[in-house]
Length: 360
Image (cartoon, rainbow, N blue to C red; front, side, top):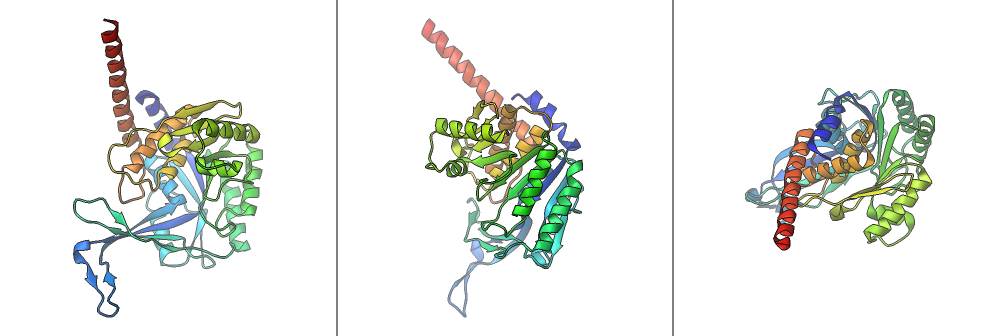
């Protein structure tokens, strides 16, 4: 990947119509000033004084944040939130950008808004420190009426989409957006339009999912194959290649500090090493930045290799954004790509000089 080729891809992002189906949640950050610490007179327990509260879409919303940052022209969230304060905050955050169309996003009193509440200690001169998180989740199956509304929205919006991203974020099956009925609808769409980019990711693994493009980490791939999670890169390549051939679709695997790989249905496997770290990191949101970058890159005609190169750059941008669930924009990706190309050129020149010195 060179800067010119990336610009060719990125300039097509504004024309894309992207559907995002999945579990949207609210990321609520409670910023704590440690200099204002107190002790409760009533309980004798420490008091964390919050000096600022900020909220942004999380879960599938983190992918949405990255789609917005990438400059995608039309984004269609398909999911739900509750009729509660968190739901109000989430809808307001989703509606903040003109590219986002909320006619497929349901607000219902039958569900609670999925919320990650993150207390964050901000001390001068130090990296943000996250304390124990406070979560709000749904613990019962998604009601039939809510499920039917999600299916109807998906079927109505699907014909106008260039790409569909699916994210299953919940820990307990059938309590979120991606239920069995919704998966059957995705399978139907995949059969009807085999050339459409449909890319899926699930925190509980993709076992039993219809044949769409899979994006997973190495541990999830290992669990799918019932082997130890710490597999060598060559073993991961073998498993990814076998899965891609079975599915007849691309399989993307993230490998943390070992980089990223993609396997084609023809058994071809490409591996891109991770970029060097440039300081302190925060890995929250990196996987969602990868998903967004893969989806839009494939939708505008990138090769599988190019897609993982762009996604690797996006992940590197995000992990260096501390104290927030970050996002990667084309200018940030392009700047990192430029510096990476310069670093590679310097490395190549050093190798040449070493060879010349040895030859002399």
